[in-house]
Length: 323
Image (tube, rainbow, N blue to C red; front, side, top):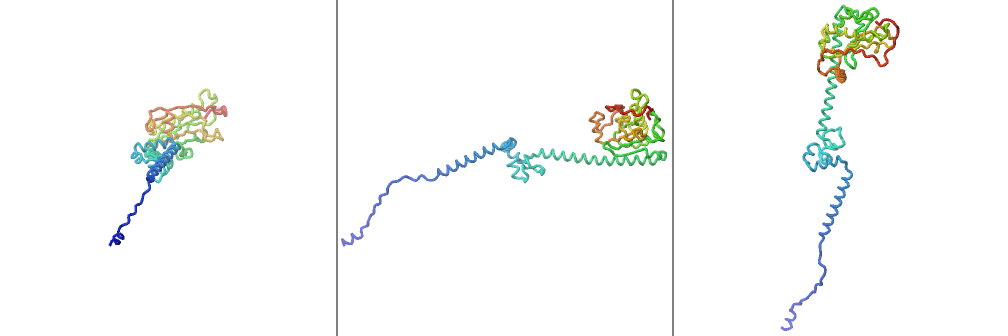
């Protein structure tokens, strides 16, 4: 029995654990990585700010001050680009650089619309002047007494509007030689034209022209300058007698022989003529800039009887009386 109890006695093994350093963990590694990342982001931000223009920095500052407002106005880099395929944001396909704001787009759109309206107005006015030209031609053609003078009446559309020129011929002068007295048929032509022009609101300018044949007394006394101005003003009176409103006439000029129709033959009778310009809007605007007439208003009866000669004058061809 005693031998059996010794066999059943448990064996106890004692192990001695040796001391060592405690485990500190890896949290410090995560903190260090965060620090390095933050420093990298900081230096990257400083580099970007240093290479960004003043305008872009202003846009970035505006975004952080009021991000919702910038986003709604079309934004810039970082806000507009995130919601638009156009660089810089906005809806204007013609703009690709910089920040496109709604105000800029609206101003450009108004400019384009204004230019389109002006172009449409020019085309409409050109059609009206063409119609006026046809009405004048018809009025003169329907007067049998004026049929022999058709070759002396020239109508064309110029930069300034509808130009009506009445020229001399050898056997059919508009005025007596050296005089501003209107011939009967010239008076009838002018009054017929005045009747048609009375149906318009366009302003009108008149210019008198002579050939290069001077007065025998030269230019010191009564000359081609005074003669051309007197003839232009006599023509104005006949247009008004035909029905043209006095307020429509804004300028009456005497140009003598400074603007010859036939420059190769200065004494050609066709150089003696009266030019009537039915002005278009562009010509009226140019005249307004010169102080001639207020746009859109009918001026008072104030005619510029200008006899301004060219800077160097014109040549004296022969000592004969002017026609």
